[in-house]
Amino acid sequence: MPDLTVALNRLRLRNPVLVASGTFGYAREMAPYVDFAKLGGVVPKTVTAAPRAGNPPPRTVETASGMLNAIGLDNDGLDHFLDHHLPYLRTLPTAVIGNVAGKTEDEFVEMAAKVHARGTGLAALELNLSCPNVSGGTDFAVDAELTRRIVRRCRDACPDLPLLAKLTPNVTDITVIAKAAADGGADAVTAVNTFVGMAVDWRRRKPILANVTGGLSGPAIKPLALRAVWRIAKLGAIPVVAVGGIATVDDVMEFLVAGASAVQVGTANFYDPSASARVADALPAALAEAGAGRVADVVGTLRA
Image (cartoon, rainbow, N blue to C red):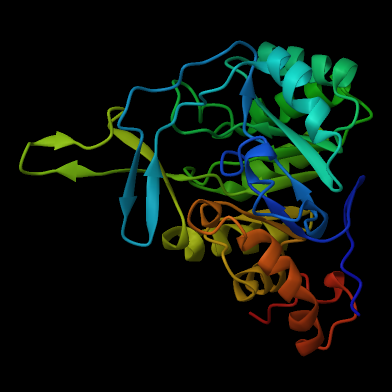
């Protein structure tokens, strides 16, 4: 049996298969469909400092090989998460990685400090520096110095908690941003968040999403995400958690070979809630087929 454990600097996971924020609710909703013990970790929905109603509908639209969403970080706020959702999440037999998004640099730091003070039971904190569906949502992760500074200040605010920086692909060179996150003290980067896109109803001469643009996810973005992960991994500066179109064990193995140390299953959860557990179940056989005794044996082995 291959060794499935992975290490993202200080974050240790039982296996490399996680579920992506925004696609799994707060886990309670998925309990009838998923054996959480099979997963390496769960990343619940992004929370903000104050409650948000999100964007007006329509907020999702199906596209060829994917979907566009402009949810707009609809959530009940960090205090509600800590008081209401975290007690349940603490009971799960897997790692739980919180996910927060701030409107400003200072708000990120304040949220990190609150999680440090009250977030007992979280295995790590993912900083959503890259949501494309809110005003200013991608401003953080398109600026290398701002990314470095936010990560560093959040690291100082919660020194004991591993940090992941979730990056946007909507930049000229994602490696510069990944290096900045590493310099700021992130334990890993999550790559990538959604690509900005839009859908149009030509008969009505109107955009389909009320927000006009949204984030494209699903199989359509996998080749783009693979390239981003491969480029970041080549830096050798920081572990990468890959996300983007992952639905099968072959997808997982492709990202691992390209340099990812772990993966997140996202959009697939909407049409197959059991996808993450199914992929985790299939991983040992895929590693054995590759002649690997552990996950680390295949990470970054692409011959290019």
